[in-house]
Length: 379
Ligand code: COS
Image 1 (spheres, protein in one colour):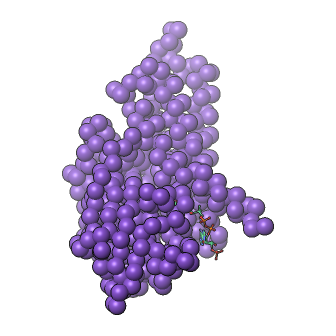
Image 2 (tube, rainbow, N blue to C red):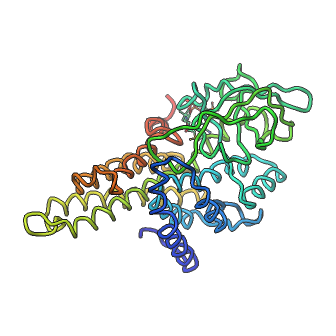
Image 3 (spheres, rainbow, N blue to C red):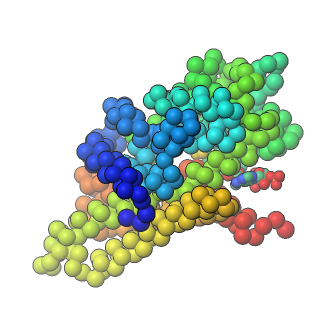
C-alpha cells in the first residue's frame, strides 16, 4: 500500500482498518446528510487513541512515527474525510505547543488530549485567510495578563475543543513580527463559539467561529516570546500539510476502490466495463495520481525525519494530492456514470469531501506561493 511499515504498525493498521470499515464508513453516510457531529463514533475513536497518535512518548502518548501516522490517517480518510479531519485537527493544534511551548504547556496540552479532549488551531480570520499576517485579533498586555479581542473563522473542532491555539497581534506596527500565539483553555471567560458552518463536504467534522471579547489570559499562556506567533504558525503548517496530503490520498484510494468494484460488475455491450480499455486507462491514470501523491507525502516525511528542509516538499505533497483528489473523485463519478451522480452511491461525497483539500491548511494557490518562493528565492 505504498508505506514500508513495521509488523507492529501493520497490526495497528489492521485494527484501524477494521474499526473504520465496521464503525465509520457506512455510519458516516447518514451523518453526511444530517451534518450532525457523530459523537458516538468519535467517543469510540478517541477511546482507541486515534486522536492522539502524535502525542510524544515523554508526555504519555504513543508518539507514533510519521510514516505510521500517515498509513493510519490515510485509512481514516478512506472511510470518511470528515472523520480524518476531526482526528487530525487536535494534533494540528498540538504542534505549535510542541514547537514553542514550555514543558508545563506541553504536559498540560498532551494531558488534555490523552484524557479524550479536542483542540483547535485558530489562525484564520474573516480578513486573514491566505493573508494570515493580516490578523485583526489583538492581544494587549495588562500587567500579568493579556486582553484578547477578535474573531477567528472556519475553525475545525471549535464547538468541541478543550483548548485553542490563538494567534493575535501584540504589536501591529511590526507586521508578521508583531503576532503572538497563546494556549487558551475553553473555560476562559470571554471565549465563545458561534456560527456553525453548514459545509459542502467533510460534514462529519464540526466547524465554527471563535470569538474573543475582552478575554483575559495570563502571561503564562503565551507560546514562546512575543512576536513569534507567525513563525510558529508557519512551522506548524509546514508539518501538518503533508498529513493533509495523506488525507487527500485516502480519498483517491477510496475513489479507485469504488470505481474498480463497479467496473467489475457493471455490464455494458455484453461485458463488464472493466474489460474496456477506456475504463482500464482511466483507472490506471487514477492510480498514477494516487500513488504519486502518496510517495510525495512519504518523501516529505523522510525529509522531516532526517532533519532536512521540507517546507517546499510538504507544500508540493498537499497541493498535488489535493488537486488530484478532486480529479480522481470526478473520474470515479464518470466511471459510475449516472449512478456516480446519485447520492445513493458513495462517489459524489468523495468529490464534495475532496474539494476542501484544495482549500484548508492553505489554499493550493498559497502552496504555489510557498513552492515558488522556495524555488525562485528572494530577488
Ligand atoms: N518557516 C519559518 N519561517 C517562515 C516560514 C516557514 N515556513 N514561512 C515564512 N516564514 C517567515 C519568513 O522567513 C519571513 O521572515 P523574515 O522577514 O525574517 O524573512 C516571515 O515569516 C514572513 O514571511 P513571508 O513574507 O513569506 O509572509 P507572507 O505574509 O508573504 O505570507 C504565506 C506567506 C502566504 C505563505 C502565509 O501567509 C500562509 O501560509 N498563508 C496561508 C495560511 C494558512 O495556511 N491558513 C490556513 C489555516 S489552518 S486551516
